[in-house]
Length: 385
Image 1 (cartoon, rainbow, N blue to C red):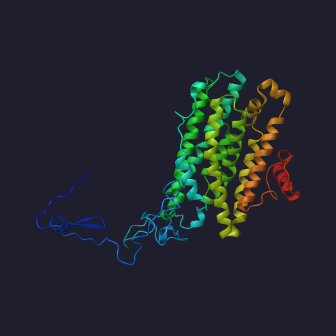
Image 2 (tube, one colour):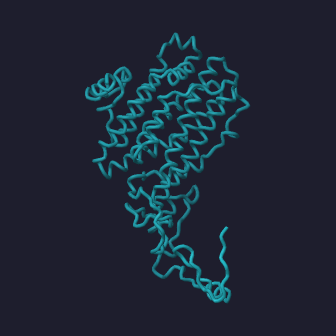
Image 3 (cartoon, helix red, strand yellow):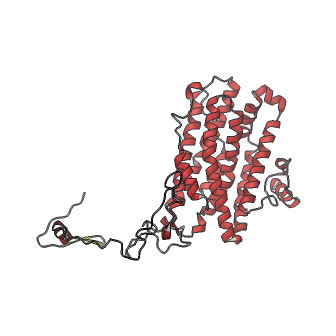
């Protein structure tokens, strides 16, 4: 540690571009305070946040100028929004300085929900009630847990990659993304624990899954990564959680899927409303988002034909390998249809019509309502290519 050497009569010490006024210590010791930081008359002294029924929320403290989130902040600092800021504060180098790049109208409420519904993968899952399953069901459950523990961590890595680039004036969005990082770490934890708790162990990781995760992490913009992750990737996982909760072979799995589902629903809600907010302020970006999802759907179409992804849920739904063989892919088709329908509905809510140009191959679109000839032709051409 580097210290300062006391020098008689020295009243200022340079510390980089700053300086320490040692004479202040002498004045303060005599009770001669500066007090320049006190609020002046005419400022927002007296502006008071009132707690709502559930407590003091982010929405409750969005009062006066403190609740005004600038479209483009005047500075790139970590100074709290609404504070008086020195002119010579350092530039933090934020690259996301446009509110529409990260904002959603529901982000404050989603943060409050996230912090109030945190749970523990150690204590809040009834591990002692884990049933001993037939080997084929245990294999299926462990393979599904393997895929989920694999894909969930990207939803922590992606926001972590971008958090430090987001202007601090958008602090509510940053705070929500921090809760997502914690949520996804816990999801990875709980599915890894499930794979090991029943004795089956981890299954197989596939290259196509890793390719989709790489596509998200390699996104050149937050827009691109958010569309691929929140709207497409996490949306599909949310559908899997819903199905998993219904198909759960014991109270342990049912509890796991139910807890993860409530978290994932928040992330998808943020992504959907963020895209809507973005497009409402700049409709010309729609084609960019279509292009992002074009690439994502092409990889997703491979996932729908990957045994390690398709067969575990089919076996769990049927109750075993033999029953699944008798049903063929009937159960998988029902789940696939639901996944695609929910994805298209999310896109529509966000203001992006994907039915007209969805990139999934024709056989995967059987039973999907409203997919027009243009979308089906695009999908078929993509499949042939």
